[in-house]
Image 1 (cartoon, rainbow, N blue to C red):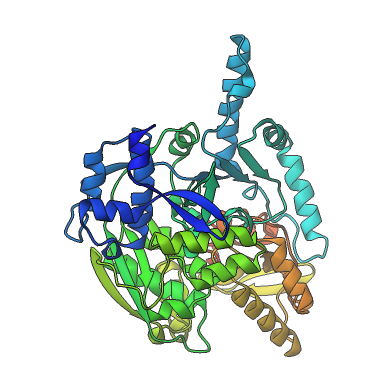
Image 2 (tube, rainbow, N blue to C red):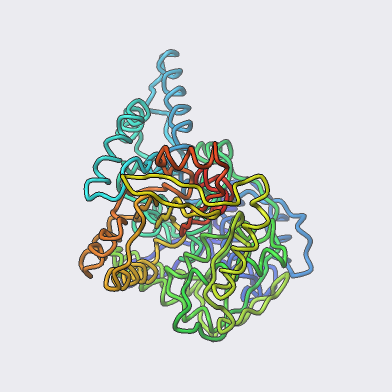
Length: 542
């Protein structure tokens, strides 16, 4: 018997079934500390550390030192963290599959069974970063863009097709299904894992910075480099310092005209100014109960933009309801509910407030409609100040650009394009298009615009890149796809498009207006990567 493994183990019952767990309550009893005073995100790290102790990766003194965590603790304790799974998109996932293929080839050359090479930690690879907006403003745009995507990436996709059937511990989601982080929310996340009778929290390390989106569902995860992710997949823990945790107590109520986007833009500006780099941010308070899990995911998604490692919402009753409505196995939900409550990972307003390294108060009532830009996602602009700010930004940036209208002819129509002319309008981002409330709002806004007889100029490149096919389904059921289409916002594909610079080509006349006549152009997007030139090299303001 492994004495280390048994030291902190206990058994819990879920209906007629019994499961083993590494019990946080036993650690609290052994080292005499109040588990409820430790932030929820660190409780998950502590449980992970118990399993690393049982595996022999650390000694009991490391567990004891972690158990002595306090807000005054310096970030000097290094711990090994082995997540439940690794999440990859195609740009960063292909090298991992290539390396595993090379290992199998080497095994075969040396007379060993190549099938012995298998990821020790499960991997999920979602192909979502290769779609490009070649065609737009047409009902056939999505089919055309997917066809072009396969043509451009046939060799890579052949490799991934092989990997899909070759490895038991690697799930690959093919192109045209959705954005990596939404697929993670809707399908891949388990909340609590079951492995040979042992229950433990679902945790994720990903090769994309916005892996943090999963924290909106109470699942701890963040982005790392490709080498670190590959090391984890072969069973090597990710070594990290125990981070300071900034508690954000949310209270108040959002005004009816305020969206989750407005909220996250304000939070991003506040947290960026406070300074949260290298820290966990943990949200709690009565205001959290008013936020849907998809709204929380919007906030967690933009963690890289406010600079933290993770932006964590503990599991609560709304989390379980989200898993229920997205079709998860009822047995999984029952196990998760019992497990999280036993381990004190379940949050309610009646719960004891943990102690935090730093504490911020955030009033939802102070949030107002806003945008961010023109070049950084934490440049917060209240909507009421937008016109003045844009005029100021253009006057400042226009040095070296044309200060007079530039005439262009597009599709037989002549336009006089002023400095700041809009080239791209994109509904494309895992941050915002994951929220049904936000997407339905966009559809209703389109319907209102059509009813008012508004039109989009033909030179503006429009696109709707839903995060998953679920989005298209509910917009269609609500009769909102048609008004979006009438404004040329037809679905162009299911994946990261404009927000990672895959906006596709612009009209040659627009390119000429920028390159030869120095027009200062702009885009408007619901993305989170609005750095100058990222959406398109021809749009300076985004």
